[in-house]
Length: 237
Image (cartoon, rainbow, N blue to C red; front, side):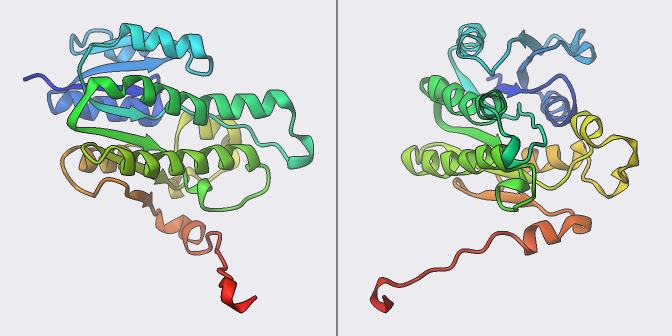
């Protein structure tokens, strides 16, 4: 039986590469993005859905365009802006939360009835959900919310495999737009490396509820120096 995947954020970068790998393994892919990707225009197994997931109407439009049975959902679409806490505006907050947290939560919730036992949900999070850096306040908060959503859903739906993937810095068009030409992108993960871990999940590795950090050695401090939790036992108070 033909396996059906839904991948968001397929116009470029990680989402495009995930789609390419799935197609190469025989999957039928429904790709969601705000702009079309001409790379897939002649592939009959790729179905392009143009929609803006940052608003509820866009999420509903995507659900209306999808088939009744889905085997794999990859919530990859996202975006960020670098803003100091003192400069956060309601517009920035809504933009970061709507695309990075609300969209995957509402899309997943809406599509759960179409995912039979054994189906897979993969949420692309970020190392920034575990690592504190100035200007990433709302984005990192949204991605931390995605992680908790992932682990919660894994406990609620034990018949599904629900996994989070937290890439370190990745060489994507979005990163290049943010940091410009002065950055050394040779030290970054490639979209291919991130998508390869996604395929390992799809093909049976890892357990439901896992949060998988893709630990680029050049940025290892982002994991080893992650936020620490101090536990104070109530009996010691």
